[in-house]
Image 1 (cartoon, each protein chain N blue to C red):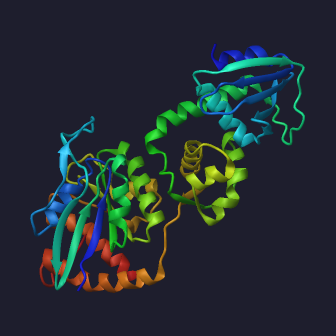
Image 2 (image 1 turned 120 degrees about the vertical axis):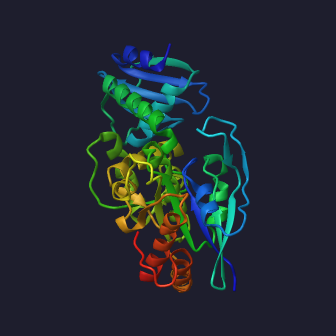
Image 3 (image 1 turned 30 degrees about the vertical axis):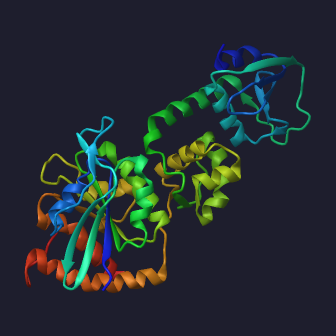
Length: 169
Length: 209
């Protein structure tokens, strides 16, 4: 059976690498490098993060995209033929919502890929909740899920929602 | 002398201001009459209101160039008489550029495809000029890059206008569709869902998120 892939995208610092490390059953391959500009953290993903999940006899790849614009060619490379897209955005950093919407709009207008928006850091209030974030992105409420990317049972929520929506459509 | 100093000074006179030796534009000619900018030529062709705004914006941002004022000169052909009071036009263009600088990191990607969500001409004249020319293309979905090419304006200006229309709810990103792929995905999702829940929540456990 051919492996399937889910793309995890979002602005710098949204929690993509953490999310993949939390869910992956294998050691995550990352491509972190020292940040060459001020992005609020020391290292950042420059090519992709890569983790795996075996679900029954199906292998699922989790690919994390780099958050910075100058690696935007990777968004297309990774989104091509993906099963779904999980767009992560930090709930305590509304100044990033604009760049997250920009990324979501770009990928979903070019690739016919189902998506769910995950709002991270729900365990660290004060934080924007999914119901508050959905109108900004102009997406239906059911496509927005809150999560704590460090907790496996919480982190898996957006992936479950994504699959549920795909089955229901 | 900057253009926003020069324009009010010359616009009280009737005539043509020719600007040349510009880095990003061919020769531009601005025709004034009674304190109003009536016509803009790019090279030897008149431009419409939308393009005229882009040209003025580019001129204000151009650091270098040469100019010559020709008193009494009038445009031979001017299909769209602009009639813009120079002071208001300068405020409008400068405001647009200030806004542009504020949102530059949030502008849509040049290749993101946008579609109309409802048809209502925006009140803001800067947006309504763009709207008049763009809405036909937006009905079927188009990117800033393609729109800029069709309307003869810089891509970044098209991105700015699309962001503004998106903020007003007048356009939204078009979501790509592919029916055969959707069928394949639905089948895969149905297979994966049960295994995923079982793995993270155990057999038969309650699920709530």
